[in-house]
Length: 158
Image (cartoon, rainbow, N blue to C red; front, side):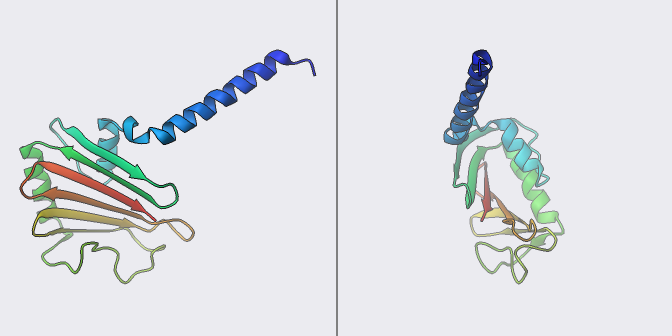
């Protein structure tokens, strides 16, 4: 139609967009930064006041999504977070299984639920949020090992 320049510009934009999309999908684990970890933790009302290091980050899947990262945290952050877990209204002394939430509820409707508890090896905080009919619920587990200054974050969307 005589619009060679416009065609080249549009095709260039589409090619760059496709390359960006592929890179962001293939290298998602490498493009995870401290700011991303802080954002995910802040959604669970957890704040790290001291500096921390990302030890490991991995994510798998598109429809059934699993994201896990490990952080090396300071002793003072660990003590503060453990105190928050154990003194919260959500703390339970006994648990029934590894995946404590949800129990006896519709997976897709209802209010978000949180439970904090202690196992033989770690302190845990579990968060479950139904996202409505037709949408996968959000399930997050934050673990702090008793004998290590680590924080482990897991998110499961199935």
